[in-house]
Image (cartoon, rainbow, N blue to C red; front, side, top):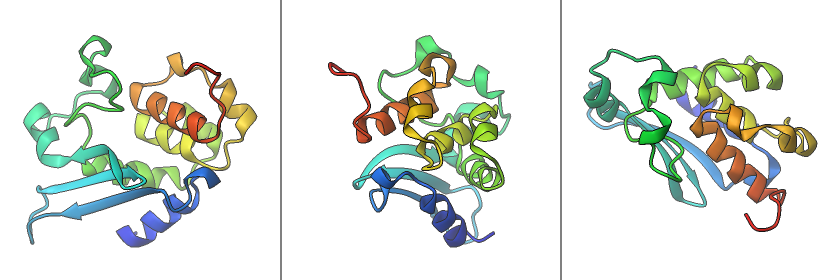
Length: 160
């Protein structure tokens, strides 16, 4: 599937609170190069997440570590959904394609945190179910986007 169609299909699934505000992007910087690529996510024009292939290569040398072994929780930067280089553009676009063929239940229980992140942003996930998700059971990536969604839906308890 071409990127523009994939982008449109993914963004059309975002919850109403994100319509026209949350955008996904993908690019290749050097003509003919499949290495200099990245994807990113913005909210109101501010970049929230970067999926850079060169940074991922620098970190893992194309030897993809299992997701749960990539960045230990004690080495994470507070407030960052993912560390620089933790995921690459190809993992992001593959997760987007996979997500299109999943139910919300399948996406929430998937082992890929990118798919989980897309699930918490999906409008098919209702507010009651959204509040029932235990953030401690999630990888840092979907956990951070869960909090963003809860904030945008005005569902956070006071004081957060």
